[in-house]
Length: 150
Image 1 (cartoon, one colour):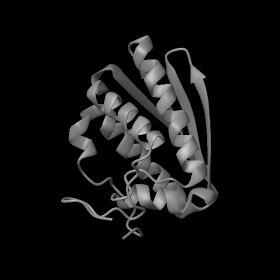
Image 2: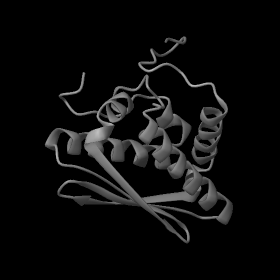
Image 3: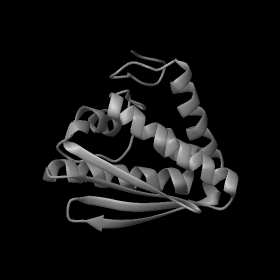
Image 4: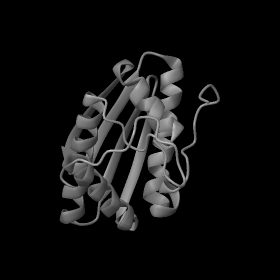
């Protein structure tokens, strides 16, 4: 599916669940200056802590991560116009995601046994840092991606 700017590899969502997930993402982008993200590289992926400055934003952040985990499990891609996100959903069964709620945010661990997918996970991490640092500006551009991904 295509819009004026992008080709959507897995189509575009328009159901209530997608609209809810999109609204949470929009709120995070709007309030990105109130978020902080720290990443710890693991031999097989990343552990990241994202925190928020207000209790309301903590709740939005936590709801967003739970929603993305559900989308991931169901294979319901988001940002499927972005090669990195399309690949994350394409290879989802070869990656593991764990998370735990923190009082001020969330800690997530994303791993894989495949070195190529570890590289994909690292690029996804860079993308999320961009969202936290630049908000909507970063969300309009394709994500960094590994050289092997076309």
